[in-house]
Image 1 (tube, rainbow, N blue to C red):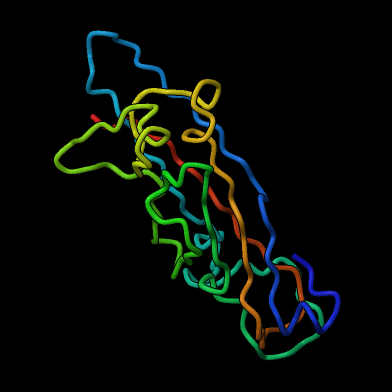
Image 2 (tube, rainbow, N blue to C red; image 1 turned 180 degrees about the vertical axis):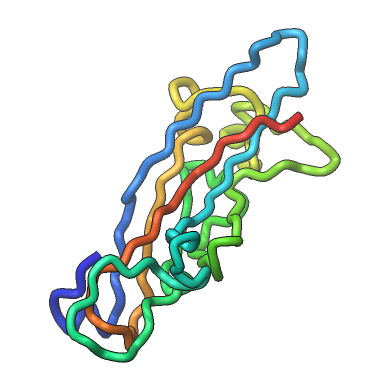
Length: 170
């Protein structure tokens, strides 16, 4: 994201559909009906190399001001699909690198929401075997990013990595 004019600086930047996740989950054992999964999102900022856990990694600094790197919480993320199956479809932010945002979460007690449930009843958290090839609206996710306005940071190049983890639930 580049702030090239004061309009972007004052209003922030929103990037729609910067990534699309297409999920395909196969049940390897057709007898086992307990196959379910969860999808999570987390952030990395190279904190092992000295970047504070709540800040963006500073790649290049322009000038020699005394301000700090942007906060991780200045970046907001929204994950949606056509069925509304993610648990939360609004913009959310990370506080630091230890935060994990659930998109599809493990239900306790374990409940499997099968493919096709969203289309039939608008059910959230579809977590059973299925594919974006057969149930596109449930197994495809669009990722939007928004950078909050009002930066008081040094000009420069800063970096964050957003990672997604698809995990089987036992």
